[in-house]
Image (cartoon, rainbow, N blue to C red):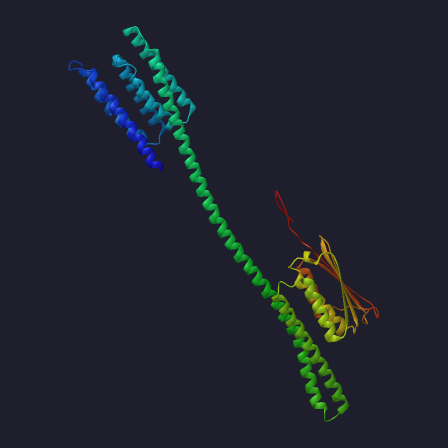
Length: 406
């Protein structure tokens, strides 16, 4: 559309120059050979200048060609004073070209001054030759020149607006494409993070199964071998060993059920964290006969998803230790949530101990807490049970008009 408009405009422009120049042939005769040469030469120069201005972007060449066009137009007015104000139509066409090609105010000012000087000189010449300046005709033709300048300026502004719109549209398309790519990369990254998180948690569960159930199954195998050897020597001792084997089997089965239950809960993401925690504690109480109690202060939905599995594992380990090592009949879990941290207190009424020697379970618990930048403390006394105090940072993101603040 832009190229078609410029083609039509340029074709009309050069056609006007040729028609106007050829009109001056009627003001010549056979004795005015030099005037004929001027008209023909002017037509050739008009055409040459026209193509130079169309096919170049250099400002100096366009200024030079426009200046030549103005001198030729002045020549028609000065050489053919009897033609009236017809020469002003040349300047009208030129004014459209000037305001179309140039936006520099200095160039526009000097062209306007040059035109005014030429117009004054031709008007003075006509007044000298004919005693009249035809002021009304001059004003009418001057309005045509002003009209041409306005049209040229409007066309230039329209072209700039189209170029700006086209550039902005291209930028919008590029931004949209970049946004789609970023969205795709973000989705892919999110899926990778989710998969890695699942793999990590499942690996930790596998490690727990290996370290707890595997240990118990090894001990069970040793006890069964011992019972097999003792059955013919000491029946009572063999029964005691078999009772130990039964207890080891029950503990292993309990560990497997808890781990499988944890995996099952992770697959149901729509179930709330508090519901999963309560259900796990209730099931543990049903399996072991130990009473459990859960107290929550604050909004549990504000607990970050990244630390929820850790809290669940820690509670699970604390319940198991309370029942297995402390012989407790009550374990209390208190969770306090605020914007800065999640505080967890786990207390049982087991037999306790004077010297807390971290076992594999407590070491694993501590490693989990340290991975999230938290702190953990173990407290116990003989006959006063066992308690664990945990603090996990509750990281959150706040949006503002200036960006993201953590």
